[in-house]
Image (cartoon, rainbow, N blue to C red; front, side):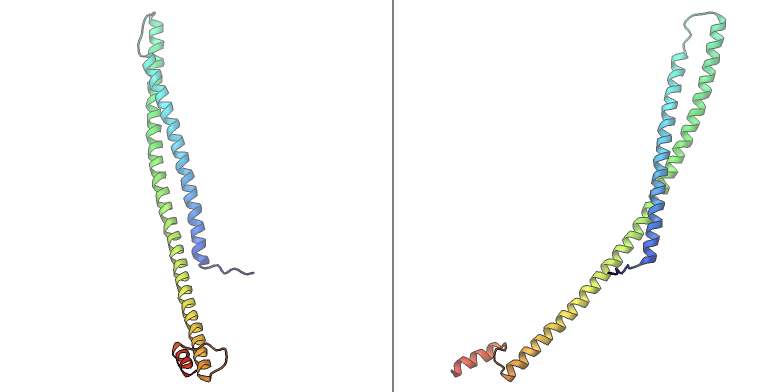
Length: 167
């Protein structure tokens, strides 16, 4: 049994748009995952800076070592914040790409649905015309049979009434 596929070109466009939407959604998920990783890293480094900020007691060598490690932590925190800002921008861009791809896919799917609805409406109109034609032929046959007076033929109300009155 062969199946007629309507709008093959538009269906191909829908498949391509679907793949692009899926890819951009996966890209968005990856960008958001990286953003969360950078947020955790920044939080860890800021906590480490807060923990090492106070010098309680010790000699000058410990103080210098603590200050050097604190400077290294601050530098790492600054770099981590920069990475976080970059990952946020990437996540925003990925979200915009995904929304655009989703809208494009929705437009193609909507067009396919409208075309399918139009085909169904056209088929329904054609069926209604065909049913009207069949009903008209049946009515014409019944009228012709009633005029000829065939036995067992369907008669109109007027013929039935006059037939009883004559009896």
